[in-house]
Image 1 (cartoon, helix red, strand yellow):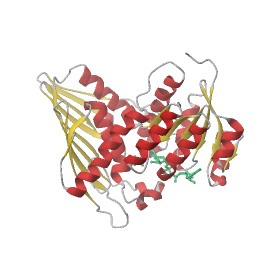
Image 2 (tube, helix red, strand yellow):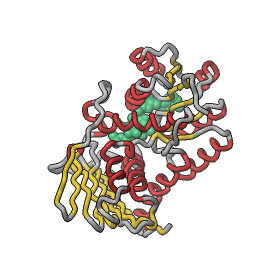
Image 3 (cartoon, protein in one colour):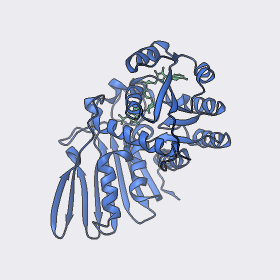
Length: 343
Ligand code: NAD
Ligand code: 89V
């Protein structure tokens, strides 16, 4: 049934990413209203509430839920806290949106998804990379058959962007680039080509100051016979470094598609090459270095909201995201055991 009244949203976690996620929600204020914020560090909740003009802020998620009974909770906290906060929200009857990675292990993610299903609340993972405009357009071109049958793809997210400056906790993760960026890149792989038939991964740590791996190379044969090579690195110094752009080359029986620097897509067939620059929605609140990703968080929010208001179907459900997480954790397993995983 379609809703006419605004949905009430509460946000848990008021750190780096919450600033943009909440601004993106405010772009949808005709359908949804942020009614309260919570951070275990009250000063962060107070500061974000002040910026957004929200009257209620807390350091206790439980108290917020008791006082406001929100329809939805958006969880933007450290990964370890996702399962317990999601369950708490569900216990209060709220639908849950959770940042990626859903949980710090596949087992925890499966258990959390099952729990929320049992509570009969809706559950979404805020997986936004597939909502980047150039990546949506690539998918449209594939579906239109512009390059015939795709047989090979390279998906590349490689830079030396100092990501730890804005997100210091990433330097302390034992499992870094596959959980933080692999969740995005392997999800984009699934979005474009469907599910994997087999997977092999190698990882490395180049930056000696961090705990986990900062380079991961994942090779997958997809069920539709596309051979897919996904590369992720925060140790790459090169000419086309333009964080946070993902470059994607897809080869097909009748041509190729290439998403390269500056959101440029080249379509090459036996008739020649046509290029186009895909426009990115320029939000006033977007951080200049993250504008591409910030336009995708708006699109991801809008897609989730369309389902919650009875106007559409959300793509990034918890159930769907478990398939992405399976690839992420299988990639670690493959790298550790130096073996190919078959599905
Ligand atoms: P951050 O450390 O800047 O912020 C996290 C906040 O959560 C902190 O203020 C912390 O005090 C608060 N918090 C932690 N546990 C809590 C609890 N139990 N109750 C209440 N508050 C709690 O981290 P961040 O960079 O904002 O990342 C947060 C999440 O967003 C992570 O899951 C991260 O992977 C994700 N993220 C996603 C994207 C994307 O493109 N989708 C980009 C950046 C971060
Ligand atoms: O999406 C993320 O979680 C980010 C970024 C892409 C910047 O690495 O950490």
